[in-house]
Image 1 (spheres, rainbow, N blue to C red):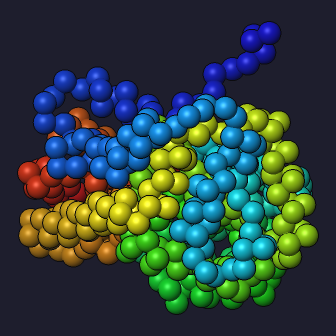
Image 2: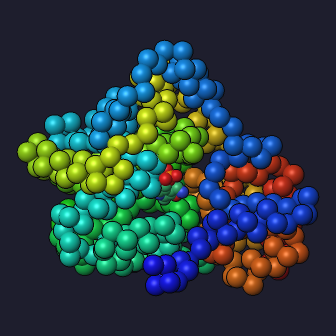
Image 3: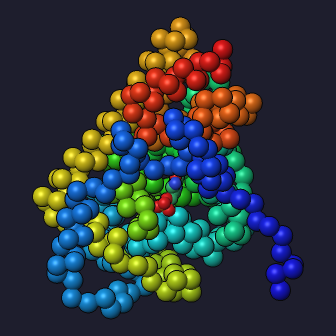
Length: 394
Ligand code: PMP
């Protein structure tokens, strides 16, 4: 049987994690995997999450099946969190999914059924799992211009020119906020132009919203998605609770369909449920129930929002501190863009030789494309990282 197979490519993020674990130097700096870390380098459980879990433990009476669409209260709350009031709910259907990745997979499989010959466009660069996932779903994958590593900014004119050439057989994967891996995001005005282009060409939006609340705020980060919803009458969105609720391993996400009318929404939803039934039958409940409890309870919701806001502002402070520390040492504004980026990541635009040298000489670990996670940087590490970057790029 297995003699027909060759080894699958190793995921770069998990390979880097193994490399970091094998480095015995005590002062190593891990800028690798995308999890939020506090000053001590821990990824804490949010207090609102702990309280919701205690409530589940104290009050849950059954572990019977929840159904193919999963936790319905959770899905409704997620739709509201992402879409706000931007679209009438009779055109919206949603299903709980195992993480943002599971939500994306369900939607990609659904879109493949709906439009088998479509081309799926991802940004250049994009989250490394987008392309393999889209290919696994059977799509032809192409890339639209997105990031200029020389300036750390979005190549917006090039992006828009590529979008303007698309048509109804194109599906465009857009990062809702906090672009991974670059950290460079569209302004509100640029989102409006993207939406106007897609409305004109008929290209279909697939919005990946994995970091709502990590950029400029919960509603601010949903600007692009809601602009899509206000102007384009059908699209899909995958959301994740991994980061903004800090429940990575619970695997909680939501697949959202917005259709032209309620009848089409029902048909698309029946296909989505059929995809889920044929894959894993139904999602696990625990993490979704945590999120439902928090979002439906005023006090817990306020507590969660305050914790999320503290994480968000700390990441912005880290960005400013790193940009300042590099500027002071190098006397140049070359890395000022780090302070303008949002979310956990910035793509520094370093070449592989520099990245390799940072590893061997400074025990500084980042992905091969020079993506860093700025969340895990306590002040002392920021200063050491700035020394290392300036030393390596001088
Ligand atoms: N999309 C993007 C852009 C991401 O960065 C991630 C997480 N790294 C996901 C989707 C999926 O997140 P998860 O499956 O962990 O919820």
